[in-house]
Image (cartoon, rainbow, N blue to C red; front, side, top):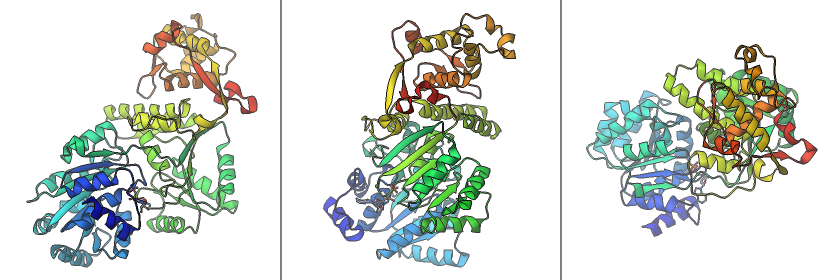
Length: 521
Ligand code: ADP
């Protein structure tokens, strides 16, 4: 069977070899086994359902929450001479009816629909009349309530599918799945553990960097000027930031477009097309941009501000280099962004439990900016991906000209201060106490009488806050989830206090900035 699959790969797509995980996924589907394929963006997921769809009789139904992508995918299949179409709300009723008729007659090998289509009983009745061989759930993480982009309407599709007279083979495909999401999808789609393919999340062609202590606007201007022949995306958090950056770069004569939800549909479409067709190379956008954009030659993604969690960050950054060519993902870190993200969580209508979860995810994102570890490894650890445990050797933590400085003594001072303050306060008040500040709150709690008061007065408050964040990032100290994370000691803190573990901090050698690097913003 695999021989035939390989032949199809060559004749239809022109490729000689399968990529990691593809052959196995195809084999499972050809054996009619429900399958879950977790592969990184650009890993080649489409082929995993398209090749079985081409080999087996009957129709393959692809469900995708990304209406904007359907047309491109269908066009690509049609250009290969394959009978494919999509049915969604962008069509007139007449067009929808025509395509439904053809579907009923078995005219299509592939049909793409959005989850909402399953709300129609008529659609289900047509599915019951045809020979459906496979249903592929694209962007399957959106089905799971644990997924970062959960769509309740998508989840109900699974129940509807199970009501079909004959349930075809089911396949879930996603680039992001934490353990929780994976377990959830496995259960929902009734996938046996042996039929989960997880090629890991590592993106070998991406170079991750954290940029600290720079004037962000100046950095971006210089970066895009240098890279202006290459397509790249700059993500900002707010529409206002997008507008400001856009007008600034435009005024400098740079080839730039913008995209956010506050723009009209036409304006967004024009901007998107201009970027996809390389009329402009720089796209400045909020996170509204990207889902469903199929542009494989994006050479860089810059995050102007801190994203809300690593799931979103990795997905957005991952839009770089889908064609496999070397690309850069740079995150510009500034401490103020933490407040913006907290504000957004606080303002949201989420239940308290969910808010707590979001604070926890935000903390992991902050830790990413402070860790001394390989950035790619940090992300893989976060997603519990054990398929690859070597440092990438490319990210800013791997290549920075750094030197390790012993900060055990300072760490002990911080930890004992946290303890003396009763493990009831956050990083900023702790920093104030260590600095020996005259702050009202410090006096109110009589922390100026503690033996640790002013113990690290030769550092600035900002440096101390960053140092505390570094301790949290390295898990030397616990920051409890919540709007104002409370610092608590953990096992490692105790070991540090007893002198059992030393604390080393990486500081950049170049420009002899030492710990000041943690200061400037
Ligand atoms: P994903 O959906 O996982 O992000 P795609 O299915 O869009 O990825 O594939 C990404 C790119 O990789 C596409 O241009 C596709 O043609 C290409 N590709 C897929 N499989 C192979 C392969 N076996 N060899 C070479 N290129 C491939």
